[in-house]
Length: 259
Image 1 (cartoon, rainbow, N blue to C red):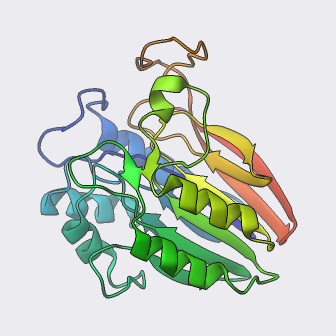
Image 2: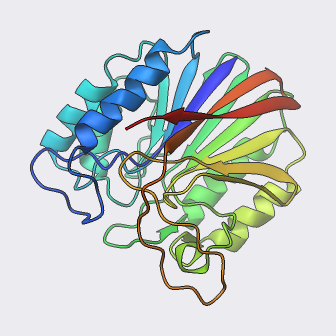
Image 3: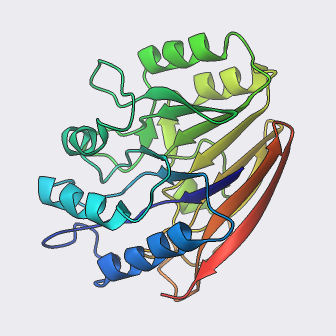
């Protein structure tokens, strides 16, 4: 099974909310989607970890859906801090099994995968969080381990990039409770996130985790502890392709797209 993981499109129909977003982001994202759609052998599913829109207007999501239209396989997406829940729900309510509450959490299956999607959006804030009801909902799903691989999708990473200023903008509310749940889970699990605008992979509590790149912009690599927030940098765009043969075996490849 082949899974594509991309993130952070920041699509805008009228004007960007984020100053760093490239002005040709629509054309750039269409190139990424075309690359995923035309990859051989065929991609089986696509994971998008947040900030599909930049301002979250209805017009933004109409454009997002049009950009995604060449993909004919299941798409699993979560909102980011630049998304708007109402528009996101309306755009994906026909394809994603959102729960009845205001949050856009859901559980789904794709082949031998169990997918748990977590809504970490805190309206008006850059940082993310999970409230107690979400933690309880997640605990119920993790209470009975499955031999299937569980993919957890969430925009704000709970695992560090070691880029200090960016980690300060990641998952904050509910972090310790989430970490405790993950550390106690005995089944095969992987966590996919976005938000950092720089692709990286890490082991966190023994769990393999990854942040995908996003075509909107990429942060420079600044690993000094006292470094200021990184500026954007002109580097090749990359997303990840995961080859999953079985729950305990997964190979991850970096796919580069010239934008």
